Structure formats: C-alpha cells, structure tokens
Length: 161
Image 1 (cartoon, helix red, strand yellow):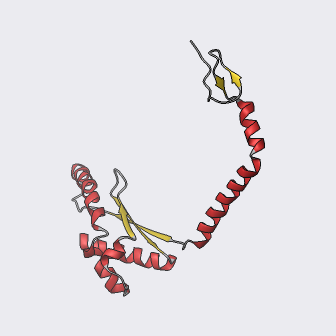
Image 2 (cartoon, rainbow, N blue to C red):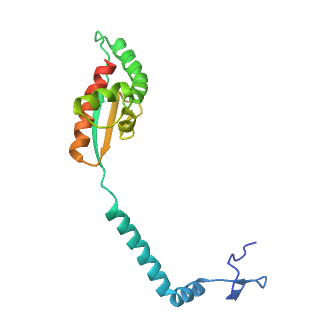
Image 3 (spheres, rainbow, N blue to C red):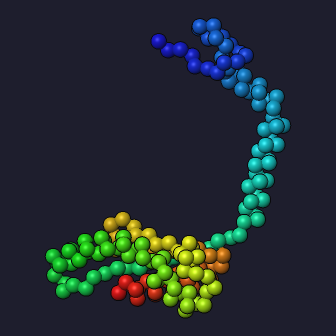
C-alpha cells in the first residue's frame, strides 16, 4: 500500500486524516520569509569572502622521484627488481619528511626552523603500483616552496642511496 509521506503541519490532509505539507506550503514560506533567506545568504557569502581575503596564501611545489634498482637487464631479473622496488617505495616515502632527510635541507638553505616544524610542510606520497615518490612542500612563498622541494629531493636521494 502506497501512502503519502509528508511533514506534519498546516496544509492538506492525507488519506488517514493527518495534515501534510506540500509544495505550495513551501512556496508560501519562501515568499513570506524571502528577505531573511536573502540576508542569510548574503551573510554567508560575505563571511566566506572575508575569510578568503584574510587568509594567508599557501603555495605548493612538488618533485617526482623515480626509484630504480640496478640489474643485469635480464627480463626475469627486471620484473623481480620492479616488484621489489614497488614494495620499497612505500617505506621510502615515509622517510622523506624525517629529520635525517630534513636537517641537511635546513642547514643548506639556512632555514630558521626545526626539522619537526619543517616536516609539517613536507609530504611524500607513493602512488599505488608505481616506483615514483611525489614530494610536496607547502609554504607562504612559491620560490621558497620550490627551493625546499628541490633540496628535500636531493637530500632524500642521498639518504636513500
């Protein structure tokens, strides 16, 4: 048995004598409260615009590291090396924002922050079934983000090799 589903309130009565609200009731409420709806919408837009204007812009720079293993070139050895490398890439990605990698970056670029603070701005992701690691640095300056991303990549390659 199909029955009309509605919200209780003034309006039409359903087959069981209950009052329900239909589209005309919603239109009536919108017409009656249109000014409040417009004001709340404008307040929301103004709040979002203010938050956007007042927030400090953040820039990202990314580098891509290709991880490879030396092999003799035989097909079976290459396939085995690729499987091994895919497994290693996940743990390598976790090492990219560790103090062992970041401290040389801080020293080389003369940054005034700790490795722990810098690690909050450095992420490393290993896309599934690849031998790539994407290192991303987020900073307030695009130039600084790029410098740090390149330095982290260089330091990471030295630590891992």
